[in-house]
Length: 304
Image 1 (spheres, rainbow, N blue to C red):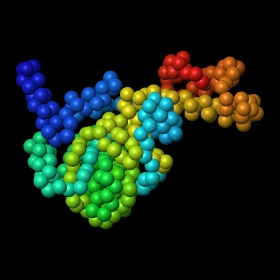
Image 2 (cartoon, rainbow, N blue to C red; image 1 turned 180 degrees about the vertical axis):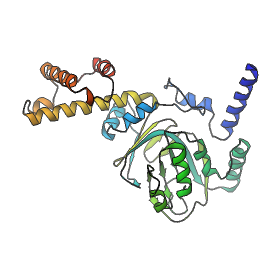
Image 3 (tube, one colour; image 1 turned 60 degrees about the vertical axis):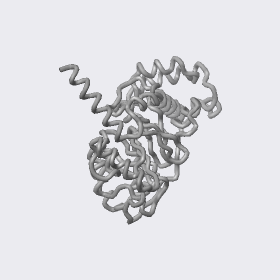
Image 4 (tube, rainbow, N blue to C red; image 1 turned 45 degrees about the vertical axis):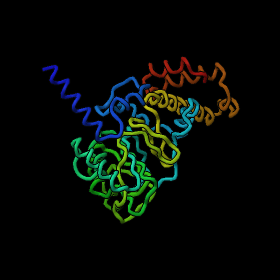
């Protein structure tokens, strides 16, 4: 029975690989720095708790932390949105290209052999898990480049409880606006429907403007733009941003109180200010987005 289960799982993962352009094993290889839980498709599964915390950090703090670690190509701006509400989730990626008939037909046949149903632009939606963000490169196409309308938008939200980020366009804006909790970051809106496009990559590395995005990245989308946080750096990026926010909150409060000068706060803190900050943390435990144990561990290696 155990042997049969192994065979069935192997068959499942082999089929899954046909419907994508890279295998589960290759995706694990690409994201090998991640040591935690994964989805069946191979994507890193950053915890729901970290996703909730990420929603409250700033784009600038995340960008600065990643840049200091050699990740210079994680941000892309200049989006149009349904509303100004921020959005965070795990990346489920798709790559679209201009249509080439014989190639599109073979990609579609491969997908159908792997058990996928319907049109290829519905396949990424079928794969969505709660907490995912469907993010696609559709090469900035607006007219005849609308990847979804309100029908698919409802399906996306039902599965992911999230929205979409498309380097392309959408249709049915009025209908999409009615989906409570749904948001979209896109290049434009158009009443046309998708034509002369083919799905070439599913759960693959993609380019969105000047950002390179891997499946499973934590995507933080705010008014300034979107930033892709590598899964293995998500926890460190988030706690660093949270710490800086606490520092800023403390500093602003003390400046308003007149206890310190701007020059004292905006430079390397003295031991006296550090001690004051630690007392302030003790007096305001409700302000901590992380546990005090996590914060204490983080501060051991912090240069302030």
